[in-house]
Image (tube, rainbow, N blue to C red; front, side, top):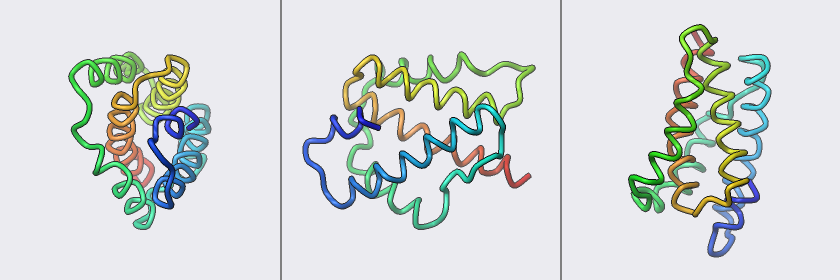
Length: 129
């Protein structure tokens, strides 16, 4: 989360709301990586508005290199013998930590956050099923 905050040109109410949501989501993903379905994923309608408001202006600022880095990290966690929900949560949590450690460029972070939204929707479906 600090990496995202540092990548922002300036902070605002929308950014602060999203950073709070992101912190809660990353904490939930850490829990899910140990015990799937153990914490709320924060995918309520109001949460979706907050994330969309933050991510939509950044959509498409990334390039193929950003996508390859993020997807390469996320895809290596997909194993046929693993619990899909646990594997996806672990992939998201580990990729977030890795990108922060790499001091990834802002566009890479934006793509990761965009991809995380898609994966959270899949996890939410899994949790309801």
